[in-house]
Length: 426
Ligand code: LLP
Image (cartoon, rainbow, N blue to C red; front, side, top):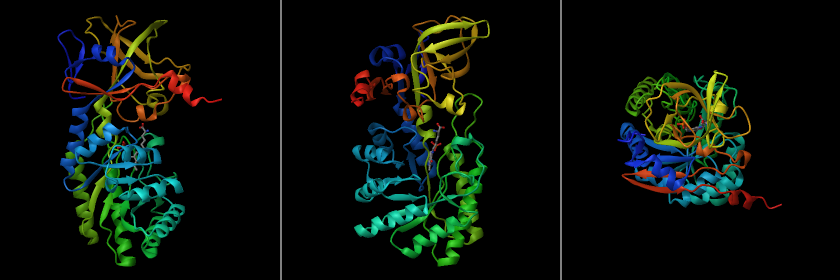
């Protein structure tokens, strides 16, 4: 986060608070959210994209306090389950500023979205078109919808988080004609209010040419729809997926660069197809919350394995950050509670779980005198860490502590063993 500095004692400080104080007050592991940093990232996107709508993708990390932060910074919100929708509504998010995603929204979830007056529902299958059409007809309402298009772009990211190649579960295929058929069905039924097309090509993407190709293809479909029905859809959502720097090797584009490129390609493509430029929207999640958080751990054991490497075990692990094990993701780690002049040591930061894949940071140089009781900070854990956390090995999930201008406040409390036992009713 932007407000992290080393204090005079060599320890990390964030928003003018020492990590030792935070660890004493809230325990470890803990996710520390730099509120000014998150707000600044939200504002950067909003300013860069001007009159486009910026939806924060809540799947990256969602709780009521964060909903309020992004709403105060002028963002809208993308949710993809009834649970995320419930959190958004509980935080007082204006339903008209919520978009509802998902490839298998249940009747109950769609009903709740209609009753709440959610602004956009993103259609993902013919089953869903029929389901939502029936529900809207019954209620006499006309929800705004987008048709999610699978544009066939091979995004260069991990296979599990790429979403626009043909052989996967999301959206309507462009090449196969399903996307055109879906849009025409919605227009012809005229029960749902088709506002535009949607494309999301994947996550943690650095090569922006993928967004350009997808914009071009989706606008080609937009022109086909106009030619078939004489209707120009007023909106276009190009999804999220903007990569962030987990290590010094990653070099992400700024929101301003992204906005400039997207606008340029949309304008030139619209000119070529003789289309009016639609109102754009995007859905960044990771790029807003990811860099704003670090996880603070305490070191429990340090083990040198036959001169191969040193295993530094911390008091969390794959239950609070599954990304290293699941996607082979790269993170870095820093000794947080003090400076050290000891020589650097090739270390692997591992958790406390009962499997050898329980790795937080695969390779990192830590000072050779790292010892039990030290604090280690792992930056960049705001996105898809707390939101994908589990209770594996019955480890309670860590809290989220928001810090700002010398003040800390708990926004998600630590789970307790009692919380776990509450669910165990046998
Ligand atoms: N819009 C849609 C339709 C999405 O499916 C996603 C992410 C986003 C926006 C936001 O993407 P972002 O800007 O955060 O990259 N668990 C994986 C990432 C899964 C992303 C799922 N969809 C990870 O930890 O890398």
